[in-house]
Image (tube, rainbow, N blue to C red; front, side, top):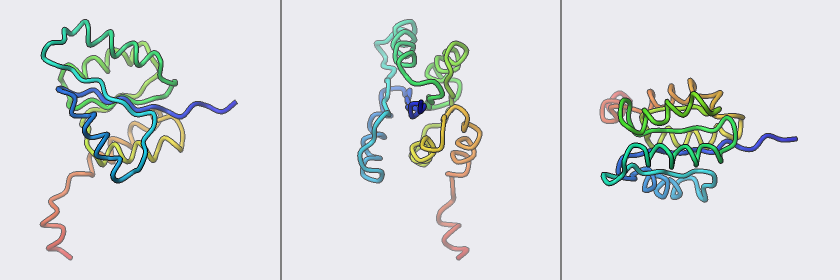
Length: 135
């Protein structure tokens, strides 16, 4: 029996993760198994938590949540759910990280590749002008 491919859930304030996912289709083509849940100003923390919990419960074991930033409501909810579900959690959502996660999920459970993905995210920030000048 083959294991289901990991899904990716982004948790973002205001829902900008959905826009990022749409933009990445220009680079990656059709994207499956990736979704965003937006925390909006009208949402209570209880409502947001229950919405995310229901989604996580439907995801294959070993899937991944990428929250927009550390210490915010989105990352706090993700961390809390990781105690009850077999999921990986990363903060610091960006396009490079998402593209890497999309590629790496073919290699196995994303929850097992969190450290490698964190390294990708960390290394995605560059002073591009300085880098080009050094060539």
